[in-house]
Length: 394
Image 1: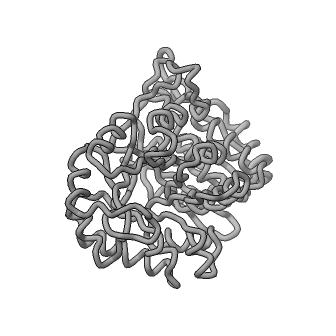
Image 2: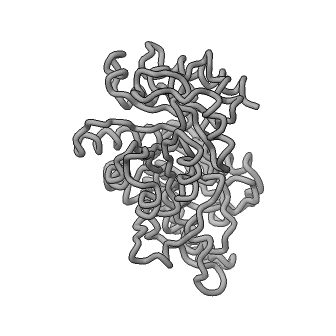
């Protein structure tokens, strides 16, 4: 139930009799109730001025009968948009945050979110997963609508932003932002986990379980890398990893396979020098996705930045069994880092013991494979790596 009780202008859309009827007859039948703050204030009859008051309000809304309540906090002037998801049976409240986008084009955000959640539930998603994914879709729509001139007052969202097409360049030509944003917050490249099926199988783990462990240990971005996988198998693998990443609000990138990234609506793609050109990947993905490029030289780095890359992966910094090319060394890596204005992630042979050299050379983070996924305690290994990165960051 999306209780549209207060207009954007602040005008009430239901009188007291209608409101009482809705509370009495509709809320107890609801699987999910999705009021914004003005609507929650109208339902409860008191102001909700801050986050502690939101926590109280969401529990009182849950007492009215719905199984779940999503109290949307976008009307507060906090730096981050904070929503609360409350499960009435367990009493658990989940705090969901996203960066705030400065825009007047917000007409229909509540309806969009509720509709997206309903569509995802119809696909068989769990409530938390559906809400997280719907918020991600909504944030992208708000972000890509912010620039548009759609008339006076509160403009509408560009709901079809994910269907970016070169046939409609004017409609989908929203500017890209640097630093790159994910859910309105700067992408954290400090611990970039790159999956490896052989390593994960060697440790007796499933792909989703291994990614879950890596994220719990502090992995801040995940790349699914399956060089030899059939398309169908890779799509299934990507969907399983995406569910884990979305639950933890960690971006998921797909290595090389733009078709798979588009099929599962991943957060972006990483391409090499012999893969799809960066400029074409950017054109196909649109401005709202993350595009990374592997580089070895300053010239390659500058070209990738010019072609629309959000970040670079450079190396191998040290010799590694997963990279068959020669290591470039710390000095050349430093030159790459300082040749561009976008983040550069160190790749190749990086461990908790030597990652400090890459960080001091200018890295935004380290990308690792076996240092996480070929360890008996993947969560502990990720935690140790992140601690080492933090200790050596400038």
